[in-house]
Amino acid sequence: MKKNIFVLLVSIIVFSCSNNPEDSMKHLDGYWEIESVSLSNGTKKDYNVNQTVDYISIGDDLKGFRKKMNPRFDGKYETSKDAEILELKIENDSLNLYYSTEFSKWKETVLMANKSQLKIINQKNDVYLYKRFVPITVN
Image (cartoon, rainbow, N blue to C red):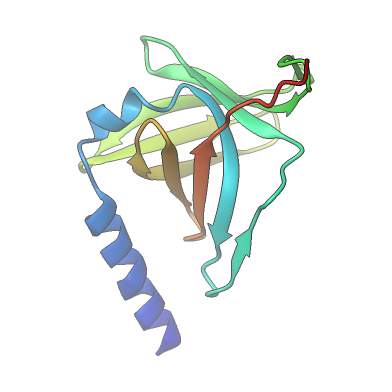
């Protein structure tokens, strides 16, 4: 019963947050800081402080990458050479992100993307809410 209610709620979220997938694409590039995760079991985890941010870069061919970045106080970033290769595809009026690494492949669906927020659902029905990262610089 609880699972049916959860599926219904996720469906409502997906359809109520849906917008033109092509409009969402233009907002993906840049630095994103995770704000919260709503897990499929109903629990929610808020992130007040993040040591890393996600950097997403998409080319004209709808292919790109996502990397974990460590922001520094001087406005620069540190990172490893590791990156998740991604490809954007519009399928059934949804914007899907297909990721691949040396070890795994997976898909996420963009529920909403604008210049200040990004909401994504993964294949486990966990919903990730990101906010645009604004670096803090100390002079």
